[in-house]
Image 1: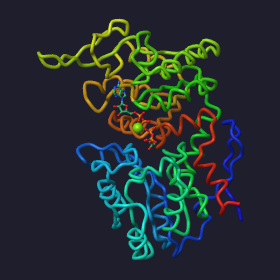
Image 2: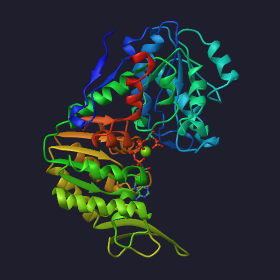
Image 3: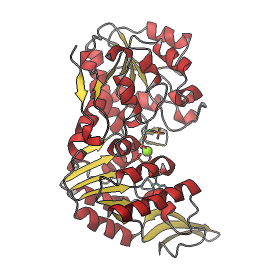
Length: 404
Ligand SMILES: Nc1ncnc2c1ncn2[C@@H]1O[C@H](COP(=O)(O)OP(=O)(O)O)[C@@H](O)[C@H]1O
Ligand SMILES: O=C(OP(=O)(O)O)[C@H](O)COP(=O)(O)O
Ligand SMILES: [Mg+2]
């Protein structure tokens, strides 16, 4: 059997052989597809459908070939509990509209009730399982939960690039129990990211922001071996301030980054000013201040105008840019100002890659999506890939029973 070979040499990983969904005989088979439908929500509806659209080619392909399609995804971080606002019903509605096919939804992921629902499906029909992170066993990568998921299907297809850096039951565990393959999105992400960022034209500038600081700050240190400049905004920036209230581990990671930047000659830009809001008895007061003179009790919600101008200039000199993480709370104007400025500068670069569920949404909201070289569905996943780490979900496909 011919297997697709995803060369990882440029990124420091080993060659990884990953079978493609194209190589599976899917007609009449039950196929469990892990997708990343972790989309931004607003008022109970899907605020940005980039990740759902990105999974459509694999889903349509399987339906057209007469597979029974069972979709699994997480949404947010419910930490093993049932959280009403994080049910996948709004996602099912959006998927149904985009696909133009009915999508059934169950309120669980495993068990006799779900198995009965699957048994009732005909070829080309689609069932969306509930948020897999309602089960603590998902993030614990519990083998019994992975086996229970595997019982629903004959084959496993992973198309969830955005969560490929997590070794969970539905991304890694299940691949031990079923013949497994990569979906079109996962394949395309790996190929396009390697093509654009494998040997980037220089200067190569990385912009990092967002809210998942603990997850991402450690990766930046190893990523610096590849970048000429690193620009830090968003919640990430707080770890770099001298009187920072950030957790000790994040402040230590920031110190490592500072030391490594000096040692490798990487230009490191952290915010020189910030914007935010102060709530007092007299109401809300918007403020902008130098980062050495932040108002007491004021929450930082954006980079300031001077920082935005400096970031723009640095990005303007880049031949390649990778951006993950909005530099402010862009969902709440006026704190979208810094992110909009960064988005416009990134879009003007000769090669521009933007990654992350929220950064993709921010790029669309700024109206620059069409000018970007690539919008990746992965934020944390792309950072890890760029830092040279083998993504556990990709490794699991390579070593799955069916791939040998
Ligand atoms: N200074 C800030 N204060 C509060 N939230 C912030 C700030 N900067 C960025 N954010 C938030 O970060 C979130 C995105 O973070 P993250 O998930 O790490 O990015 P991505 O999904 O692009 O990988 C956004 O919802 C944005 O509001
Ligand atoms: O949204 C995601 O990542 P991202 O915020 O880095 O783009 C993925 O769905 C992974 O989610 P997680 O970081 O809660 O594991
Ligand atoms: Mg996110």
